[in-house]
Length: 287
Image 1 (cartoon, rainbow, N blue to C red):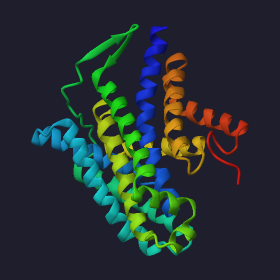
Image 2: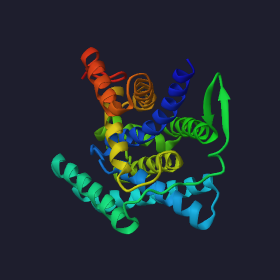
Image 3: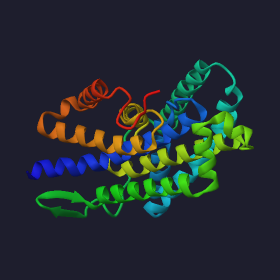
Image 4: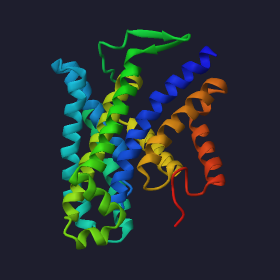
């Protein structure tokens, strides 16, 4: 029982991180119609920014994560304007190629600039552990879950209570109609890339102290994010959030009860089972 509770706690934490990247991916795809394969590597750069701020400059951990989110938001705007905007009217395959090229560019740059070694983001919360019903819960992991929930709530409020969020939803749901009523599609695209990149940076900064920081960590995150958006339903914000937690729980519990050697297999097996029962995903709608 204690082991099961431990795995559930770990799964909730991991699922929240997956969900952040999946949510950013969902928002970007909904507006730009481009699967941004490089978003996991935005998380990687966010993790490195957090690491350097904390380790070299002694910046408070939470402030470092916030700075990383802001920096990656600006990078997201630059990427949208310089890479994706010039090809917005080109065939969709061009967007695929550009996203893949950006993925390799970011990963290779990180390998050249920072090396292939693993880095540890040291925080004051690593050594504080709480025991609940026999399960050991490090404060760092509790902070991750709380931060993820706060970010999810903030995104929902942004999308539903602000003019910018309403414009983003309008372009995502009915692009032509949104443009006809005067919404600036290019501005919304830049905003969406900024938000998606900031969400990825938050994921990287939050998971960095737990799984370490390394140049290829983005590949693992983006693969799981794609599994989640298919599992939750393409274009569904709720599906990205719930799907993240569900996938994290499935991975963690199955790894603890069966074997951690097949952790990635459990995720894809669960995806196949869900799609066999509900082809549109958990929250997707039939077209």
